[in-house]
Length: 200
Image (cartoon, rainbow, N blue to C red; front, side, top):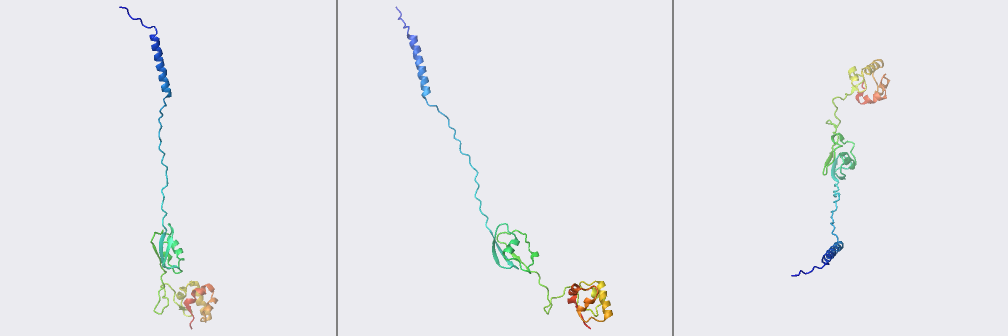
């Protein structure tokens, strides 16, 4: 039986066909859009200052020995007791500021009381009572050396000079005559004027 003859162009056709497929595939790949990966980066949070509340001023009550007692005052944060007293018009002359801590910081709602200096004790006649160390009133015409030495501004030397003057010139006729005594001037006389008397 006779075998059919193969076409001499078969391998060539197959090669051309394969080449065509390769070229077509390459064109397809070139035309296909490339897929790119996009990385989405979220924005970094920015630091923002939180709103802070403005501190409320202080409400202070001041009374006692100040120019404007029973005063309700509004003072800024950080104020001290001395600021509150100044805002109330200042302290009176008889205010006992040693009894108040002027440097103390104030808190809202504080009450500041400024006391007065203690009044001098009075006797039954309404006169100031003598203090234990106050010199007593002496009659310079009869006073001893110790009596005169106890007077303010008079030492033992001046006390002896007063006695010597009295012995040499007789009794004093006035307090001003003490200026004739050596060692006594106007200043010394003013110191002892309320504590001496001249009696026969």
